[in-house]
Image (cartoon, rainbow, N blue to C red; front, side, top):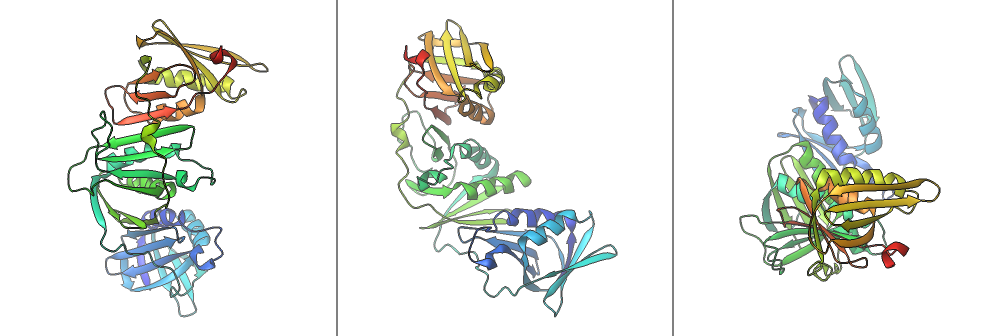
Length: 380
């Protein structure tokens, strides 16, 4: 095996697949990156047996071949290389010589015979979607995935195709995530053939790596391949294959409130800035912030006996009841506001013990639901 490529291309490819490498596995071989020199370029692969990734980079290939290189060492060295052309050449002694300018170093390699190849999905259902649209869908839902391993299905994002069943939702593809304290749902209506009423749970890690791939090369067509137990994402020079999470995702439709007593429209940036300031005080009191609606204003209130208190006032357009108060974890509010792109947001409230809803004004394709916190003030 021998090839020459640009350091930046090599670095981007190695950095991408290195994130997939299993660090806590009892199978040492998956701690390596598979490097394959082919006619069309160089393929870099990693596989932790749950998620696998392939990235093809541009290269001038002198001799085809493949080797395994230790991921941590290979990634660390490539990151420190100067911005220049880099050559990799396999020797008969089982090492790979990496040369640049007048310098070089050698890395011990392994034969790739026992490296687990990425599985191929048989007879997949194929969906094509604009990558930028899907990237936004991921960003608006992935942060609400549960980090706890107690309920494994909540470690993934529900991906649905077909009719929603909700009268206000005209989407035909949806992503839904929840950690039990909040729920994020983003839908869109895409053209083309779609599988009828299909739903799968995709590990958050797979979607996060896909998001990074799209962000590194925006604007393109994303191809999704669905199988019985696996899902594959093909995007430009990336291929990501992941096992699906098996289990029953909660019926999120039962969580979405049917109506609200108050409908408050506010400037998104004003609310976000106020919430982030209130969070400084609230951090010393379990992140609790009280939200009060009085007349045409919204108040964000927080206090911590050992720190101080804060009262933020935001101009608001209020429909329905103009006297409402409720307490939330302010971090959950900030998370949602950061991924909403509209200038204004609508907050729907129905009393101190009912879930609140945040939506972008003028767009029903995103719904964020956050559970309230019972406090002495809101229970009064």
